[in-house]
Length: 252
Image 1 (cartoon, rainbow, N blue to C red):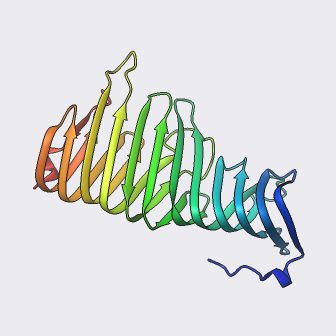
Image 2 (cartoon, rainbow, N blue to C red):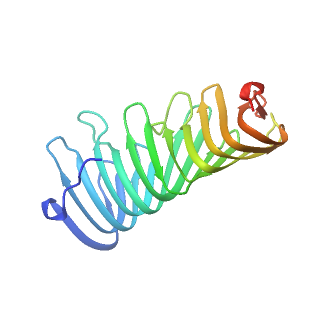
């Protein structure tokens, strides 16, 4: 994390209660107090405190917290649209990422006490420090993933609109981990539910591959798996009928 300028070095510093600041470049934020400075490359550094809400329209990203330090940079050369390249948020953090493709619409909500968000042209990364919950909803297929852990890391698509793939790509959570996978009934598939607990979880949500690896004191109860316990390691795979099954190669 690059060091943010102290308030005395900022080109602007304001004290405005319940304020909303917006510019034509797609960034909106609300904060009790805020300050900013801009360098020669048009990168802007913000410090916001108290009831902070930051929204980037171009990223499909929203960050809420009591304290947020973040950096914004033009999305492309000569672009008027800004993207958030880095943010450090603490106290009652909520990160919401919305991504649409021609065949799906996903909303990912990550909540916890402290998070470090960064993005590159290929992916966005959320480092979660402290007890965290990831709640991902695929609205068209009506699939939901809720995962909780003591800390972890999540990988998201950096854009708000993509040709294919998933907005929520991958997550690694440290335990104790609890995972809830639900699928509402649609015209093509029945309703289903799977719950799992473990000491460690890795969730992969890539095109054509939806897989969960669970390690340590694994317990799974599901519509398609039955009640399974006593495993030191297990792998769940989503089949073509949107049902989660134990992979026989997962091992004990």
